[in-house]
Image 1 (cartoon, helix red, strand yellow):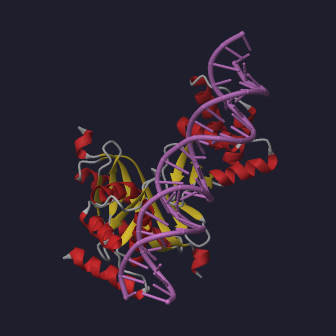
Image 2 (cartoon, rainbow over the protein chains, first blue to last red):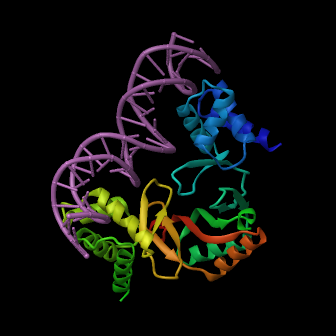
Image 3 (tube, each protein chain N blue to C red):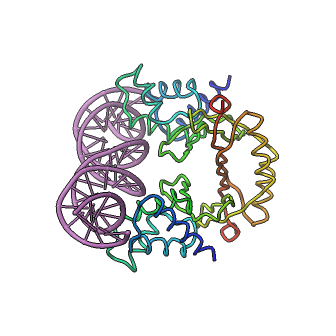
Length: 144
Length: 144
DNA sequence: CTACATGCAAACGGTTTGCACGTGT
DNA sequence: ACACGTGCAAACCGTTTGCATGTAG
């Protein structure tokens, strides 16, 4: 199962870097992996806090950064001043449909677009390291 | 000339909203239109400050927001915590190639990608209001 | 026993706001 | 004259950091 692969990957990262496996990190990782994707730090913090009142905001921030470093998660910004994290499904990449009314975020992937991005970059002599693409507007529900 | 069309558009906006035309707004607009696109608030502020020492940061922020409201400019965020503004060329839309080494931002436009975005959105019943697409990596210079 | 992790509170960085004073209409 | 604009400093908001204490290895 995906979840366990990530846990394993994070465990390895922790070991490799000489860091420590702690109760908090386990709790945060569990919650993060089981929560919906694209959670903001604040949402994650509140969710965690509900079950584990002692946990600190700073710890959540620090741990999420570790997830990003370890490669199991990715930091995203939608321009609303909130940092979000999404868990990564290995090599896969996807982009976002962001509903500006209800805030729902859907994902999509389109190989043709990615190929065209590559072509555009090539024509500028530009080497793509990463990209982001977000479509903002009304989701099916809110469009009605 | 483009510049004058924008000045005119802003003047109209000011009038329509019952706002006032002031020395500062003129200065900021001039500087903004003549500066390179994608300037951060900080860069604009420093540039303005060099010639007009009295100008306040808050005024620059407020005025840039007005530009955005009036439709002559657009706020953009590249996830580095800085707000940038770019002046809009009417209906045109373009996307960005951001060099992560030297910070240079190039623009491109690709109708095929836009059509595909529309297709993706349609297949989700999603109505696009706006979008953003940024390719991050190394520009031609930095790639060498 | 040592180094890393935690929770708290204070600091931070960019942006926004409150307010007394200035200025366009 | 009145309403809107300005500059400054203080507030703000999400995030990060310093520090004393806790805990994994």
